[in-house]
Image (cartoon, rainbow, N blue to C red; front, side, top):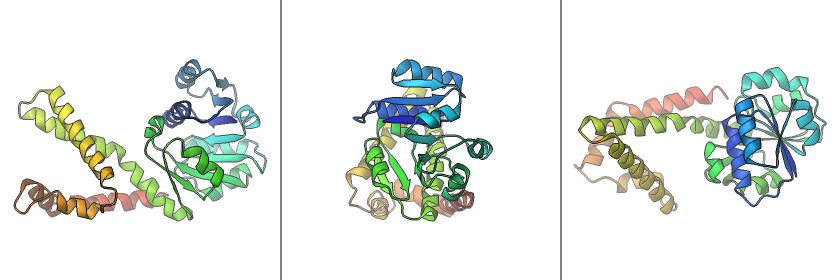
Length: 252
């Protein structure tokens, strides 16, 4: 199989790393030279990756084309490129919906996919819309595939995936607080990372337990966990979270 990537940002690098760490059989991967540093790094690391001079050449040589550009760039360049109606396209562009991608490309075979950077480790959820057996079989090698029938439903997943930076910032602020209490910075960071890693693993180990039940099980009346949860609710921390999610949701 020959794959082509239009756009050479972090997500392209993550997907290609995931592909070569999987059992997928790939003949060649073509990438653009838009980001020269990234494209040079990828092509040097993997012999089956070749940098092409223009996006049209990538489309012509690839069986499956990944659109991995920003919405701004996508709106600017897609209508200028030539796709045949049967060209299989994977759109990774967050705020350009299926209808517009099909209009730009004239292709009838477009799938929207929401991968996250963890795909380089072949982990994490991968949202696919609409359902497509071949695309599912491809991405199941790279993570946990969740198929969505309705594109409107996928908006919630796009919105939720926007919490990565705030999650890491929660860890950062927690670690900083520990450091302010006299704990060495490296020890504070190590503890914080291990704590949240254990919580994540515990969540998956109890995958038959609802998240609501986990909240109840992790606190005791009058205990510190119950106190922190109560105070955060009082400060409307979680209502702010919902408000932010709703504002992001409207962008999709």
